[in-house]
Figure 1 (cartoon, one colour):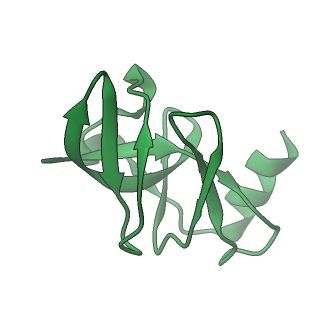
Figure 2 (cartoon, rainbow, N blue to C red; figure 1 turned 60 degrees about the vertical axis):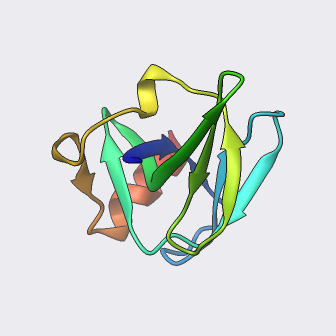
Length: 97
């Protein structure tokens, strides 16, 4: 098992809004993230990769929800690559872009 940072989008305009992660089937998985990070300029949520099967990865989030995602080089990072989001203004700027 390893930690990964998966790109996400916010489902709202408030700092504590749910986020959405793109699932393996192209749908959206909504979750409540206690922590968001910025990795390579993208808003990300941390997850624990717990299983790999048929080229897909099962990940578990801090709210205990799970979903299958397609692996992507942009979300496999070490915690040292991430910068915690501390200021709601950063999120507003990213949503406006």
